Length: 260
Figure (cartoon, rainbow, N blue to C red):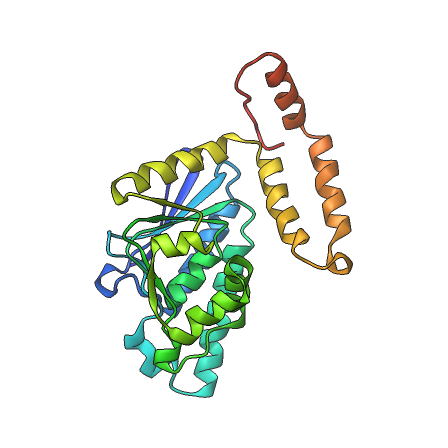
């Protein structure tokens, strides 16, 4: 039975990490399922935004499934294999062309936090708990997760989180820039759904291009893909959505974007 569940509501896709008996701990197979689900989402133009969440109210994802460590950490080869699968899944999420919002309730720890960091935005409930316990498990946290953590909170705070392996709450996560919004648990679902529906109503060409532009802006000037950025401008300029946006503005009505 799949532990990454894909459901849709209108133009919004929902990916649910469904392993509640292990507080949604991640297994290698689940990471493969995540890649497959993202392929399906990317291949469906009618889907324009993605919610990533965990099943139940106790955890978004509590990290890697420690009960599997005797297998996944059995040899250097197995460790390399697991790292490659994990990196592929995290990279796949981070490069999804559609906006991804992580909806976080309960525990968001270790590899679960690394997964949430790959989302474009993170909305958390007031009772969410964060941490990276790698230092208490003898694990080296992957450089991709460290890089993304540093982008959000800076190197000193990243070192604090990694060195201490401490847990901290949603209020601190918001203060240091790890999450973007904190809401009462009873309001989180409605708020995230409404936000993603708003994203889905906007011009997909513009939203997807904005995601690329932010990624490119983080790179040194010499490393930016100028041809790609030029192509995105051309695509927008020649799109029917540009005409629709301008026409709707002049007619004082809601635009109906087609993504073309």
